[in-house]
Image 1 (cartoon, rainbow, N blue to C red):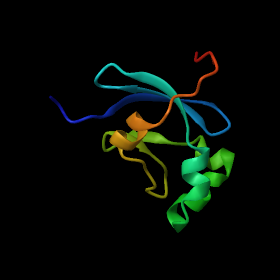
Image 2: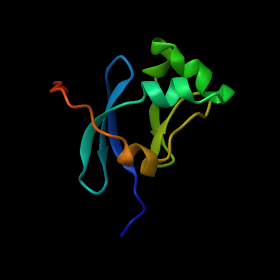
Image 3: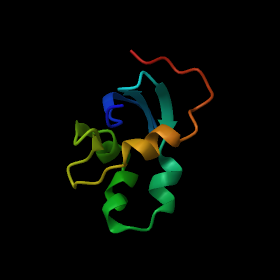
Image 4: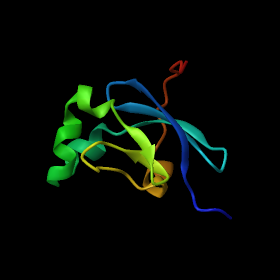
Length: 88
């Protein structure tokens, strides 16, 4: 099997992102707890929602301008958001 990677990502709201992986899995994940519970300085800018929603896909995952990222395997294991949210 190929290396797991994020194929597409779209900001939804708050700290939620819709992710589509190369294995076909799709989910909306909430990264709020991941960002606010991690004390590493690299994640501090992501607490600002304006900064948070300006990510791109690089190195097979979502990444921010300060080089903060989450491993695709970590993102894939997050519990998906339960409520129905429309992603356009």
